[in-house]
Image 1: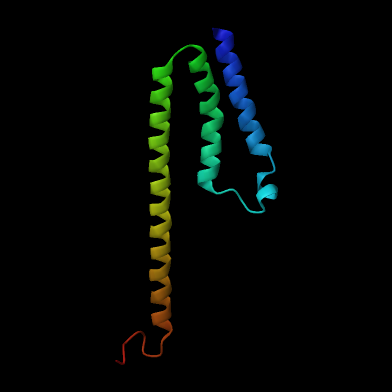
Image 2 (image 1 turned 90 degrees about the horizontal axis):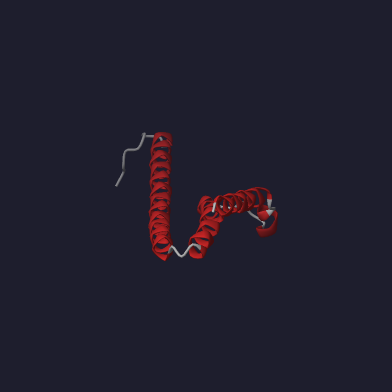
Amino acid sequence: MIWQIVLTALISCLLLIVEHYWPTQAMIKKPLNKLSAYTLGTLAIQLPFTVLMIIWGERNTVYALWTITLLGGVVVAAVNQLDVYLETRTRMEISEREAQSLRPDHGTDDR
Protein backbone atom coordinates (compact mmCIF):
# COMPACT_ATOMS: atom_id res chain seq x y z
CA MET A 1 0.00 0.00 0.00
CA ILE A 2 2.76 2.47 0.89
CA TRP A 3 4.53 1.72 -2.39
CA GLN A 4 1.36 2.45 -4.33
CA ILE A 5 1.18 5.85 -2.62
CA VAL A 6 4.87 6.54 -3.28
CA LEU A 7 4.49 5.51 -6.95
CA THR A 8 1.40 7.72 -7.35
CA ALA A 9 3.21 10.68 -5.80
CA LEU A 10 6.24 10.06 -8.04
CA ILE A 11 4.07 9.95 -11.17
CA SER A 12 2.37 13.18 -10.12
CA CYS A 13 5.73 14.89 -9.50
CA LEU A 14 7.09 13.74 -12.85
CA LEU A 15 3.99 15.03 -14.65
CA LEU A 16 4.40 18.41 -12.95
CA ILE A 17 8.08 18.59 -13.93
CA VAL A 18 7.30 17.65 -17.55
CA GLU A 19 4.50 20.22 -17.69
CA HIS A 20 6.80 22.87 -16.30
CA TYR A 21 9.58 22.30 -18.83
CA TRP A 22 7.54 21.15 -21.85
CA PRO A 23 7.81 23.77 -24.62
CA THR A 24 4.09 24.49 -24.65
CA GLN A 25 4.63 28.17 -25.36
CA ALA A 26 6.67 27.39 -28.48
CA MET A 27 4.14 24.79 -29.65
CA ILE A 28 1.07 27.03 -29.38
CA LYS A 29 2.99 30.20 -30.37
CA LYS A 30 1.77 32.21 -27.37
CA PRO A 31 2.10 32.16 -23.59
CA LEU A 32 -0.07 29.70 -21.71
CA ASN A 33 -2.77 31.59 -19.83
CA LYS A 34 -3.22 31.21 -16.08
CA LEU A 35 -6.35 29.08 -16.22
CA SER A 36 -4.77 26.60 -18.64
CA ALA A 37 -1.69 26.35 -16.44
CA TYR A 38 -3.86 25.82 -13.34
CA THR A 39 -5.85 23.14 -15.16
CA LEU A 40 -2.76 21.25 -16.30
CA GLY A 41 -1.26 21.38 -12.82
CA THR A 42 -4.46 20.20 -11.20
CA LEU A 43 -4.77 17.31 -13.66
CA ALA A 44 -1.17 16.28 -13.02
CA ILE A 45 -2.03 15.91 -9.34
CA GLN A 46 -5.60 14.61 -9.52
CA LEU A 47 -5.35 12.02 -12.31
CA PRO A 48 -2.74 9.79 -10.65
CA PHE A 49 -4.66 10.03 -7.36
CA THR A 50 -7.90 9.15 -9.17
CA VAL A 51 -6.30 6.06 -10.69
CA LEU A 52 -5.06 4.99 -7.24
CA MET A 53 -8.52 5.45 -5.74
CA ILE A 54 -10.10 3.40 -8.54
CA ILE A 55 -7.54 0.62 -7.96
CA TRP A 56 -8.43 0.67 -4.27
CA GLY A 57 -12.15 0.62 -5.09
CA GLU A 58 -12.81 4.03 -3.56
CA ARG A 59 -15.39 5.24 -6.09
CA ASN A 60 -17.09 7.63 -3.63
CA THR A 61 -13.73 9.30 -3.00
CA VAL A 62 -13.30 9.77 -6.76
CA TYR A 63 -16.76 11.32 -7.09
CA ALA A 64 -16.14 13.66 -4.15
CA LEU A 65 -12.67 14.61 -5.42
CA TRP A 66 -13.85 15.54 -8.91
CA THR A 67 -17.00 17.30 -7.70
CA ILE A 68 -14.89 19.49 -5.41
CA THR A 69 -12.22 20.00 -8.09
CA LEU A 70 -14.70 20.98 -10.81
CA LEU A 71 -16.61 23.35 -8.55
CA GLY A 72 -13.34 24.90 -7.39
CA GLY A 73 -12.27 25.30 -11.02
CA VAL A 74 -15.49 27.10 -11.89
CA VAL A 75 -14.97 29.47 -8.95
CA VAL A 76 -11.35 30.17 -9.98
CA ALA A 77 -12.44 30.87 -13.57
CA ALA A 78 -15.24 33.18 -12.40
CA VAL A 79 -12.98 35.12 -10.04
CA ASN A 80 -10.35 35.46 -12.80
CA GLN A 81 -12.98 36.89 -15.15
CA LEU A 82 -14.13 39.29 -12.43
CA ASP A 83 -10.51 40.45 -11.95
CA VAL A 84 -10.13 41.05 -15.70
CA TYR A 85 -13.37 43.05 -15.77
CA LEU A 86 -12.43 45.17 -12.74
CA GLU A 87 -8.93 45.84 -14.07
CA THR A 88 -10.29 46.86 -17.47
CA ARG A 89 -12.86 49.15 -15.87
CA THR A 90 -10.22 50.79 -13.68
CA ARG A 91 -7.95 51.37 -16.69
CA MET A 92 -10.82 52.91 -18.64
CA GLU A 93 -11.63 55.26 -15.75
CA ILE A 94 -7.98 56.33 -15.41
CA SER A 95 -7.73 56.86 -19.16
CA GLU A 96 -10.88 58.96 -19.18
CA ARG A 97 -9.62 61.13 -16.30
CA GLU A 98 -6.30 61.66 -18.08
CA ALA A 99 -8.10 62.57 -21.30
CA GLN A 100 -10.29 65.08 -19.46
CA SER A 101 -7.27 66.70 -17.83
CA LEU A 102 -5.70 67.23 -21.28
CA ARG A 103 -8.70 69.10 -22.66
CA PRO A 104 -8.23 72.90 -22.83
CA ASP A 105 -11.01 73.66 -20.37
CA HIS A 106 -10.11 70.66 -18.17
CA GLY A 107 -13.09 68.51 -18.86
CA THR A 108 -16.01 70.94 -18.99
CA ASP A 109 -18.63 70.08 -21.54
CA ASP A 110 -19.60 72.61 -24.22
CA ARG A 111 -22.87 70.92 -25.09
